[in-house]
Image (cartoon, rainbow, N blue to C red; front, side, top):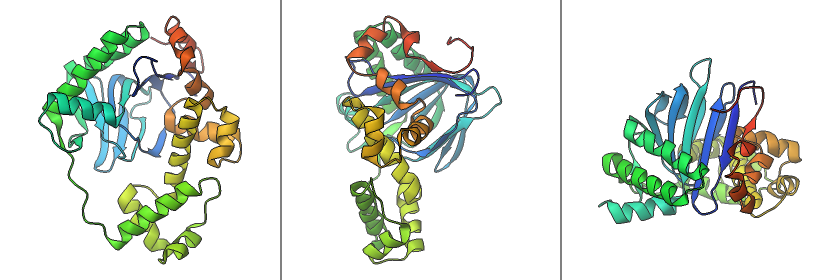
Length: 295
């Protein structure tokens, strides 16, 4: 990380289905990636530029950024001093449960707007973090559910059903399944296209149209996702690197830190049974470089 950057990515053992990230980034950039669950983030300092399919969002203090599952996006500093933010990553199951209990949304809940100026929701996101870091799972869970329910009522709706599958979309889905199956030894684009009975450029276009990124970018993201699941299960970073197809642990470290925001070791230390002890010393889980203290 650059001078003055710090990050803490972790999970409270009594709050399953929700990840928390609090960070300051200056030079760090998140490459195009997506999440299996939802993203709710609020900026407390600086500007974050979030690249989404509809354009770039310039998110400043008081803004809440909402990203639906599997939506590709990037992130980087919008000003030289970077940005500070609190982010919550609830699973799809958690958000769907809240939607079923507190709204009339039927189908998969989602958000048409990607950024809103909502100081109350921003405060609730910060309160979830503060309660969790204080070891108060009851308060953190309560604030999370109030916040998600508010966002769904104010800005949520049912996501539109998928359009009928074209031949290109079917090929893209088959290509994704093959890449996931052969993650440790993936084929070239030409070999993959030949196996599917199409051309390399046709497959590349179809894959981008359906998943928002080319196959090699998607594969890196998928490898990091699988590595996270392995790390959650107690696999060492070195073992996880080999299992998901990276050449070695340094390659995993580099891609993992770029996509998740912290390296694999810091991520793993912020989870599991050890995470409960860390609540009594939150700074012990802060990954940082330089001399700037975490606020």
